[in-house]
Image (cartoon, rainbow, N blue to C red):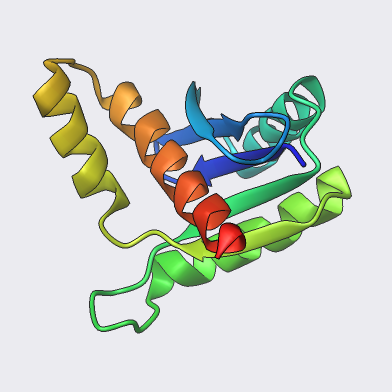
Length: 134
C-alpha cells in the first residue's frame, strides 16, 4: 500500500511518499501554503499522482503528550483532507521529527527550509510504516 506523509506548517507543508509496498518513505518536496482550500487541493492532486492509498499527517503534540492549538489544527486538516481525497487519513505523533530532519540535514551538509519540511514528512511517514511492521 502506497502512503503519503505530511508535515503541516503554516508556511510550508512537507510531503513524503512511500514505495509501492509501503515499507520505505522518501521526501518528495514542499507545498507552499496559500490558503486552506488550495493546500488541500494541492495535496489531493499529489495523492492522485503518487497513487496513494492513504495519508499520514503529523500530529504536533507537546513534549508531555498533551495537544495544543496546532494539534487541533492538524486534526481538522486531516478530517477535511479525508473528505476531499476519499482516502484514509491517519494522525501520527510527530514529536522531534523536525529536530531529526535538521540533524540529518546538518550531517549531510544540505541547506534550505523546504528540505527540512520534506525530510520531516519522510521521518513521520517512516515511523508510521515501521509501527505497522511490528
